[in-house]
Structure formats: structure tokens, C-alpha cells
Length: 226
Image (cartoon, rainbow, N blue to C red; front, top):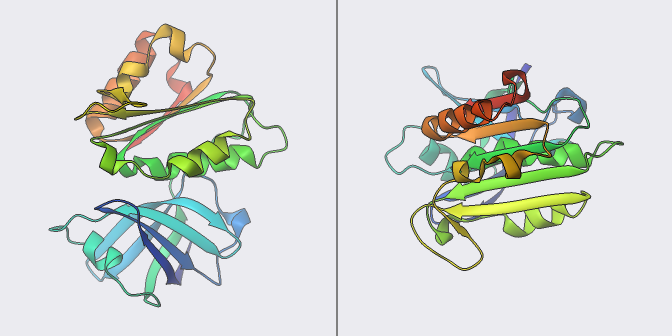
């Protein structure tokens, strides 16, 4: 963890309210980062805000942020012009990828996507790549889906990869209806040994309870909520 400054170098709007933001930081080194960690923006003396890092390479890192119109911080970050310099601290956080090559299941909603995607990237870089990986993701509507091609491309590096997207508010071909927690059944989870959860408190609580009820040890469930 260190205090530093980083510069916005790229901005892309992924959906009507989700942005992909890339930053460069001359002090950032890949070997200081564990997939799943976050950066803390120090926007004002009294205002700090944490965002999970979605990917990183060399001296660059990428965030995926939901812009909340009446929020105190996300408009400041998402609306900033290219070249804006921010102060902050990184890397921070204990919701991280475990150093084990066992099969893993990632379950998330909304921009809880970011740390999970970073973790899956981390698995693909290991010498002993886990054979079985699942990425179960939920949003409200089709218009809220992002990074589908990136997930599928990354998933091609695993021997057995499952990518399932749930839509809670509409029915669409190729997508499942309702909630990511509906996927948690004895048959679905049987081949996975570690579970990573990130999203709303309601989703995380429900997923943890279902996994534990199905016999998954608490020590094998890693989670973060927002």
C-alpha cells in the first residue's frame, strides 16, 4: 500500500451508467497487486472513495464504475476529462484471489463484476491454471450487460468454463431470468471448491447462506458487498 498520484488516460462508456476508466501510475508495479484489491481515491480532505481494480498491466490499471447521478463521488470520477490527475492509495483490501489452483466460482452483480473479473484474469496467468471456472453474473436488464466478449475470450483459456448471465427484470433469449442465487444448487456447485461473491448486501447474504446450507465450508467462501 502506498500513497500516489494517477492520471486518467482512457474513458469508455459501457452502458448508460457504467464506465470503463483507465489510469496510469508511474509508481504502480504489478507485483504489488493481488487480484481483487482496490484503489482509494482521495477526492477532497473529507471525501475518500474506494473502487475495485478490474484489470492491471505494467503501470496501468482499469476501473469499472457505475455513475450515480446524485452521488457525491462517482460523477467527479466518471465526468473527469482525460488527463485529470487524482491522488489516492493502492493497492488495498483483503477480498483477494487465493493462491490455489483449485476450481473456482465467481458470483456477482452490477459493478461487483470488477474484482471478480480481475481474479479470473489472475487465474489465467498462473502456471497451473484451474481447470474449472464459473462466472455467474447478474444485472437488471439486457441494456446493463457489459464485457460479455471479454469474459468469453478470457474463459477460453480454461478447460471447463461456464459463463451465465441473469436478468432480474426482463426475459431475453440466451439469458436466465431472475437472480444469480437461483444458480446455487447442489448440481451446479458440485465441481467447485472456492466461491467468490461480490455485489449487493442482499445477494451476498443470500448466496452465503445457500452455499453454507449446501455444505460449503465458510473458509471456502470469500465475499465483499457494497
